[in-house]
Each structure stands twice: as C-alpha cells, then as structure tokens.
Image (cartoon, rainbow, N blue to C red; front, top):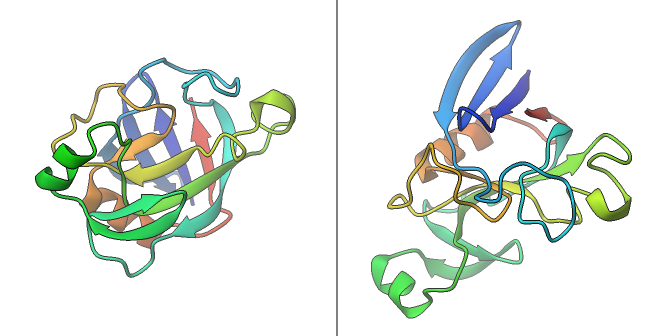
Length: 157
C-alpha cells in the first residue's frame, strides 16, 4: 500500500495492489510546490509516514504543536483565534526519504513539520491554500488514518 498526492489535481489517492482503492480532495500549499525550509510550499518526492497522532480523538479535536489542546473546533473558537492555522482531528507527520531533496539540510520535510491533517470543514478543498501541509476534510483524514500505518510511503508529485 502507498499514498499518492497530486499537487496539480489536489487529490490524495490510496493505492493497493496496483489499484487506487480510495481518493480524497485535498488542499496543498498556496505557495505551490517546493522543498526549502520556511518556504510555505508543499514538498515533493518520496516520503513516509513517520508518526500518527490523534488516534481515538473526536472529530475536530484541535492540535497545536502536535498536542491536543483540549479544544474542539467551532465557529466561535475560530472567531476568537482568527490567526490560527487549524490542525484538526488527526495528524500524519511526514518524513522525506530523499537526501538533499526532502531530507536533511534546509529541505527536511519532518523538520518543516509537514503533515497530512484535518482542517475546518468550511475550508475549500481542491484549491491550494495551506502553509505547506496537505489539508483534508475531518471525516476523510479520520478514515485515511485508519487505513495507513507508520512507514507507509507517500509520493507527492
């Protein structure tokens, strides 16, 4: 099994035995593709899921610094914190596999804190709007979280 993310099509696909078994709309970086630290871009290439965070948490659980804040996302909470980049429900923390492209030095995906994660359901999918991560609907990330394991390969192209 592996995951394929298409930046051009704003889609995430799960492949098993040479067959796409499920696909989801996503939102990648507003700044487009790129690997440089502090670029706000979505890194390309071969990655793996290094960590899964949020197992068993309710939908719309709010995470800051990969920690559950004890909050549940709501419109009222969003009004109180308009500058937050909402990371909700589950986190799949990615690690690059290609030295010099998305691993080590100034291009390290994991050190850039690039995740596949949930976002408010009011946020559009199919449009690049993130700060570098791959955003998904909360129900979709919860489902994907159950399908994949730590070590699952993720190809971002």
